[in-house]
Length: 529
Image (cartoon, rainbow, N blue to C red; front, side, top):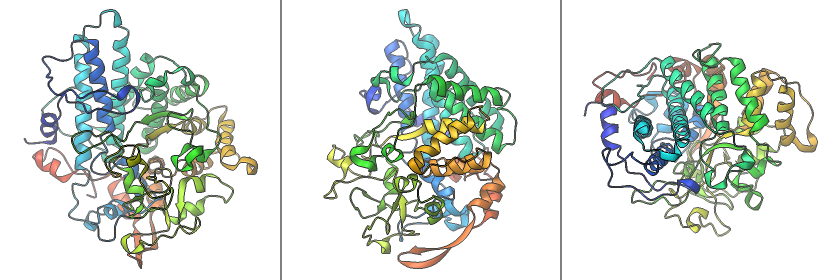
């Protein structure tokens, strides 16, 4: 097996893990082949579930994007245990020499992404052979959902690695990386198809059993995100000739006017740490989420949120916050960036001293700052028992079940404002008014004001790094770079992140080195790595 494609395709079968809550709950398929599958509408549905399952597990191993992108941004340091390897510091400092043993840090993710894309490509190639009968109206819907998933996967990959092989059908060829414009063309056309072929069912009218499935609104929102990133990072005026600025704005306005979404009244209630006040999953602000549940085990079911444990306080709980591995310790600059009247600060960040938490594990924590991620923290009951385990999870590490909310309605509002909506001030004010409540005071909308608002609104949700990069690598580098003091095992050490390293890599990450070796040099490593 000479390259990642062969490795991926031979490893990726029609076996589907039982997935998540709602429509994704299904039994595994273990004895099917290309020859006896993809015949009926039921086969098509199960294959579609397999595509969602592929998306669900891309972060089950390796380094998840929600964790990695916070470390890459100015929000967090690498953290982890004081005796652990320095892979997360390598990410944080954009320096391969920081951890020479970790040159394949993202290999599990690379393979998982291509496995998921294989599933999507396989289903797309088989749709014409399905006996649709009197359910022909399902065909464009299934294709739209599958193409959205493929677009989502490629968008993750192209942002992270910058140069990836492009596969739009199952293949075992050893192909070089595509020009980024080719990848973005596929992404844009996939999303455009999804927008045009998914029903315009508002949030209020969507059956609860279908929560988690791709909607027209999710596709329109992701198109807006892709447009802003592509035109910003590559300094273009439109999205590869497929979508211009007006079209991107129109998509977002459609979500706002017809999607049926709205802001949850209290920002803190968006997150499980608010306990009895938590509004729950699939709430009116969730436009798209990757679904998880607690049924992961060590026998092949990979349904849980396997990455959230990285955000937990290092090997210590303090009700309601559960223990974890202390990754992505929050930079005090983020805490200090909030106005004291901004409710998002205490809703987003676990503040050890400010909350009176008796944290005694500084000797085990690297890059301790006194701040952790509250939005995606494992939770425990008052006796320190994992909520995930209480619900039936086999282990708190793999049984976390909080969904990853990829797109919130607040994001749609701020993207539309950024793209120049006539209602920009109204959208901007709505987000800020919720944050400040009775302390709200109007602020003129502007590009810089919107970017600052996005920093505060979406802190620790895996968005900030991409917002920095799309303003220019030089802007990202100068913002992220710093020299400060952190605690390693309770001892003060100097922490330096160099702008030069970020510029050298163009903000991209290292392609797993073993994949370059397997390709016999067909794949080329990114600059700076």
